[in-house]
Length: 460
Image 1 (tube, rainbow, N blue to C red):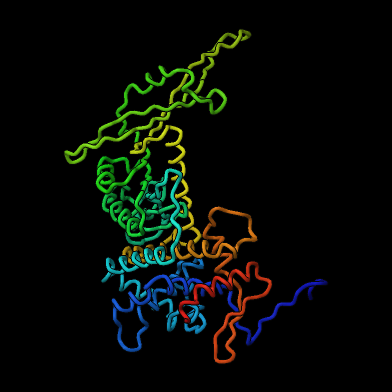
Image 2: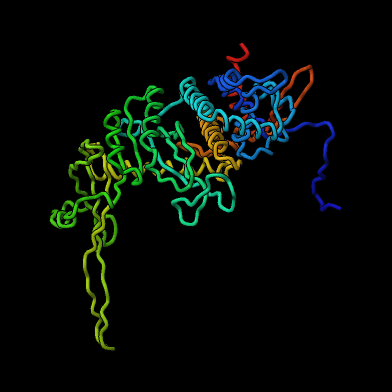
C-alpha cells in the first residue's frame, strides 16, 4: 500500500534503457582523432574469430570514462550491439577477456603498448587542435609531480610504503601541460621510489612530447623533491626554463637572516597582523658530473612578532618578552621575475594536485584493479588517455554544461555527470540501432550538435 501521491515502480519487459549514452562521444572522439584501434589491431595480430586488440581495449577506456576501473564494470556491456556501435568496435568482450588481454599485453609487450597509447594521447591533442594555454609569462607550464596511490592491505606487486605517512601503495609520476592540465606523460612506480630517481629521463621524454605538439616555450614547474643540479643541467640543454621549490637541505645561504634584518623598512610588505614579508635573491652555482650551472635563488623571508610570558609573583604585572622570528622558503629558477611574481607563479603549480585527485578519485584509479605491476602500468597509461578524452569533450562540449555556473575548467566528475552519464533509450527499429535522448535533458541540443560534429567525418 502506497501513500497518497506515491509512484508505482515496475520493470518493463521490452524497454531497453542505458544511463551512459554519452559513451558514443568517447567512441567517436577516439575514432576521429586517433589511430588507437587500428594501431593495436595491426601491431598484434590474432587468429580467426578472435576479438581484435583494439576492440578489447576501447571498451575498457570507455569504462574508465564512466568513472569505473574494475573489470566487472564491463559485464553489462558484454555482447551489447549498441555499445559496440557506439564505440566503433565490432563487439565488446567479457571482463575475463579484457583481464586476460591486458595481462598478456603487459607481460609480453609492455614497452610497445605504452608507446602506442602515448602516441594516441599526442594524436588526440594534435588532430583536435586542443588548446594548450600558456601562463602569464608566455610559457606553457609543464607541471611534474608524484602522487601516492593508497593500495594498503593488499598483496599487489609493487605495493610499498610511500612518502605519505602510513600510506602503502604506489607513487606514479605525471607530467601535465597547459592551463587545461593535459596529461602528456606518466610513469608507474613502486611506492618507495623517490621522485628524483629516474626523473631526468622522464623529464626529457615529457619535454620532447610537448615539443611534438608544437610548443616552443616551456616552463618546467616542480616541487622540492626535484631540486637537483642534474635536472637544471637537463633543462639548460633542452632550452627549457624552470621553477623549482627549493629544498632547505640544498640551500647554502648562512647569512640570509642578517641580510633580511639589514633591509630597509620599505622593503617589507605587511600581509597580516604582526606579519611582514620581504624577498631576497642571488645567483648560485650548482654542479653535477663536473658540470656547472648558474641558477637564481629567490628567498621569501617572513618576519613575525612573537612573545613569551615570564613567571612573576602573584599580584604583579605580567612581564612580556617580545622578539622577532624569521622564517624562509625559496625557489630555484631561470626566470628574472620579482620575488612576489615568482611565488605567485609557483603557487599555480598546486593546481596539478587537483589533476591527480581527479585522476585517482573520479576515474577510480586510486586502488589499481590488477595484482600485476606491469598490468597496472598499462592501465595507468590507458587512464591518462581516458582523462585526456574527457578533458577534450569538456572543452568541445562546453555548451552542454552552459546551464551550470561559469567555470574556467570543469572537473572530471562534472564532465562525466553531464556528458557521459546521459540517460537514453535503445531503439532497434528499421534495422538500425539508435539512442533516443530525452527532451528534458539539459543541454540536449548542444549534446546532439557535438555528436554530429564528431561523427560527421566518419560517415561521409
